[in-house]
Amino acid sequence: MTQGDNIISIQSVSKHFGPVKAVDDTSFNIKRGEFFSLLGPSGCGKTTLLRILAGFELPTSGEVTIDGQPMSTVPPHARPTNMVFQSYAIFPHLNVRENIAYGLRKRRLGKAETARIVEQALELIKMPGYGERRSDQLSGGQRQRVALARALVCQPKVLLLDEPLGALDKKLREEMQIELRQIQRTVGITFVFVTHDQEEALTLSDRIAVMSRGKVLQIDHSTRLYEAPNCREVAEFIGTMNILPGTIGEVSHGRANVAAGTHGAFEARTDGSAPRPGTPVLIAIRPEKLQMSWERPGLSVNSLAGKVGAVAYFGDRSHFYVDVEGCEKPLAVALQNGERRLDGSDLVGKPVWLSWEPDSAVLLPA
Ligand SMILES: Nc1ncnc2c1ncn2[C@@H]1O[C@H](COP(=O)(O)OP(=O)(O)O)[C@@H](O)[C@H]1O
Ligand SMILES: [Mg+2]
Image: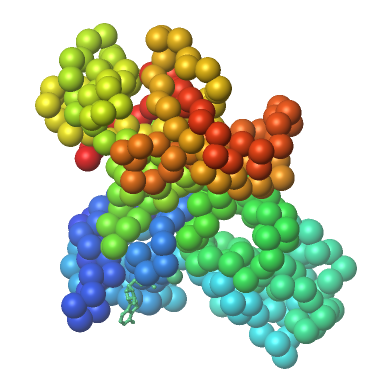
């Protein structure tokens, strides 16, 4: 990879607040033009990492490089970054036009040029004709778009966004996600986007870094994170994952035989290097990869007997929670309601069989 591919390089960065390791010896790169998300539960260090990129916090140790330039002695206003916050940080005493133009003040442009750029920005955020509106005449979504426009007219190389859609209701948030992605594609600026909402990260991002307790657990594309998580924490943070403990037995031709106590043995696919026989592992299966049936399935697939304990209805799909002897938690099975002919609640208490293809399971370190 040439140096030009990465716009941000984070090298062994830590940030300690007293005993709290908010960011704990983290290293990774962000590519030029990428929509990159930091995803993780509240308190895992996302905001701290973003503030380090912006220069509002100095790392306790480590180094950040942006566009080839080490940042350790560069103050926030001199960095090629700009930040958009969760709260609607636009000036209440200025109208929309003045708010956006505020971003341009440092560039000392003429009146006509300023007006032209502001008009362009209003087009970009789909708010032409809103220039004279005061901020109290705007909805939450519109205020956030104005904040975005104000940050973008500064032409930063990197835009840092800290849960910018977090205060919006679900419907509006989903609309804004699509718009945000379109805007990012149009301007081509690198976005570093912080969220604790996994669906939001999956929809928007080119790549996602999943964080936990100040560390990055996995960096990958949405589909890889969902289909091939590298550990239990990532698997359970992104969607729902059923987990069965087991021990690796014989491995051949990309297939492992996994002994799972009283459940017998299961077949699972191994990606690349397989763990050694005798290694404890976790068999992880997504709810939509489990089939539920009355009859015991054929021998070519993995199967387990259980009893339906509860049903959760989500409209488009339902989750059936199946109690299986020896499993600490019920296994979740997702069924699309378009294909389902039975009323789910009728099934509670019924014995069923669960089955899955060897390729549908992922092996995780125990
Ligand atoms: N200025 C600060 N002083 C002390 N502790 C802080 C400060 N900022 C953040 N923290 C702590 O660092 C950890 C990470 O916080 P933060 O980066 O805000 O997480 P996130 O944005 O993922 O919710 C938390 O435990 C938080 O309490
Ligand atoms: Mg935060």
